[in-house]
Amino acid sequence: MVRRDRGLPRRHGPRADRPRRGARGVARPRPPGRAGRRDGADVGVSVPRVRVDPERCIGTGDCARLAPQAFRLDESRGVSVPLPGAETADADVLAEAAFNCPTRAITVEKAKI
Image (cartoon, one colour):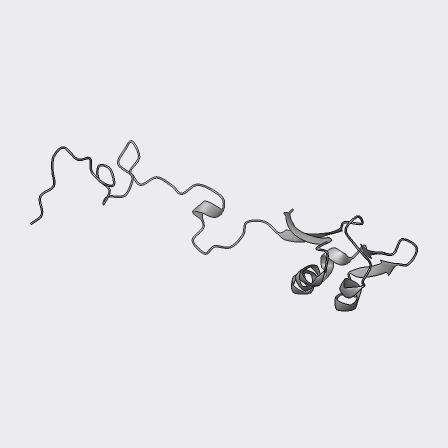
């Protein structure tokens, strides 16, 4: 049996092997939200938000070729613009278009609603 020096503090605090209990000795409920879920599913629905930075875009049209349902090339300004229904496009296609943008002008963010 290994003895520890009484001068050293316990590594994990007192009763580290026991679950935390509330004032009445009952296990505390899990907090609401993602921290309390065991399956790891997101709470709420996330919708991608698509943006194109016109200052960075050089108008190569790669995004319009990869995702024609989400982007079009504006000939007058020479930049790519997202279409009104870009949020409904497949998230993988949007991510691929953002990844293949040579100047990284496309950002796809997940916004919870």
